[in-house]
Length: 196
Length: 196
DNA sequence: GTCTATATCCTGATAGAC
DNA sequence: GTCTATCAGGATATAGAC
Image (cartoon, rainbow over all chains, first blue to last red):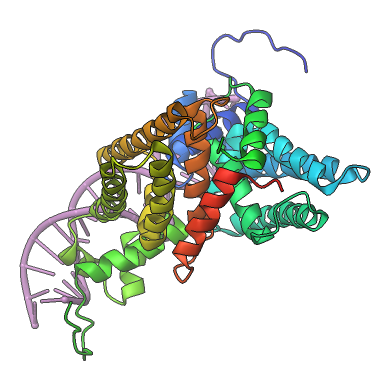
């Protein structure tokens, strides 16, 4: 990645800059409440300049949620590949990885979790997200079968509560936060509970 | 509540009917992605008919999130009033109540949790919500001070994770679900953890 | 309580000049 | 890479008839 020299005159933005600003506004105001004009104003250019870099507003959303889904899937692949570990350990690692990925791709994951399914692209994202959820649910089930996780609660319910807690991090986590320490705290609280 | 006789001819809706349909569409498509025309079409009337019952689109949102905030605040008042109980018991009850209220006012709470703060009314709702969050955080702190809840994690962090888990229920809970059983499961998992 | 018609503004997106 | 100008459609909201 070559560092470009500071520019003079016209801003001279690129696709990445548009994507960055759009993502920020989408998270702050919501995707539907953010117009292409908003993105343009924030970058200090006209609406048309945006369409030079990007084919459509929805394309921006596709790119962002795609980043989140790729990162989550890859992290899950890594965890699943460790066959030597116990199912309990793999679940712990899945929780840890989910937190780390969420923090590393905070804006992207935040947007992903807010997708409604109003367009084909959004529905495709929801489909991919459902696949991730199912893989996580399967890991919980295996940990229950192994005896590492309590069997008096429905594994699907456990999965939803556990990763619901993880996903709720998007509501308040800030980019400068220590992700590893956070992952530790989440894992501890989830597995050991908050009772003394 | 008197049951009105089945109508003939024109629908003859009232404010409650508009509110009900609007809430459903707001949750399904998002507030910003839902137009007054959408609400009108769903009710089988024209846009103007909606404005006979309701002064503005935003007023609908205000009403709905107000319902959620009132219910949550009231439940919290009830829990706080039980001075005889220990702080640990009060926290358990707060979690239980939160789940029950969330299930009883599912559409309203769902919308409340998705408010962005784009308008004065939305910002007012966020303010009230922040007050609720602070009361819950205070209850966690008291339970920690009392020794009922682990002290090796920041009370504010515990509060965020705990009620983040509770709030994540809006993502999948359905109206016909047994709220008490759900509240039991959430409380058990939160306090005892998922390890065997 | 609902309608048609309308006012006003903003939306996503395109054409073509510089 | 950005601009001005423009398009067609849809947004919230209102006026006034029935």
